[in-house]
Length: 82
Image 1 (cartoon, rainbow, N blue to C red):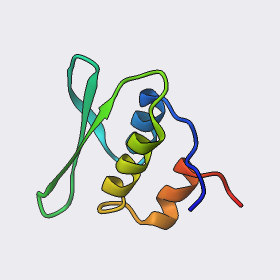
Image 2 (cartoon, rainbow, N blue to C red):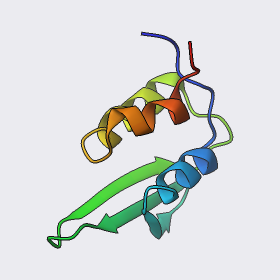
Image 3 (tube, one colour):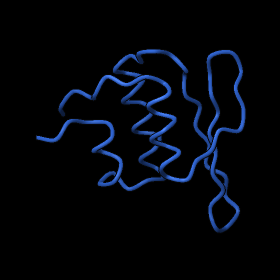
């Protein structure tokens, strides 16, 4: 698998906002994002608000998001096209 893009916490927040998530809380350097889908199910992510996230953290957020968002839509935001 190719290496993920280097992203900041705010970059991740903007990506998730484009998929309908919104910021609901922040504790220290962690931002909680949530969206409510049609059947009332709440989908929640916590993103560290750092200037540069570790690649492992970026991959972990990608995997979590892929449960809710189709990978074909999510992948261009996290990985370079090849």
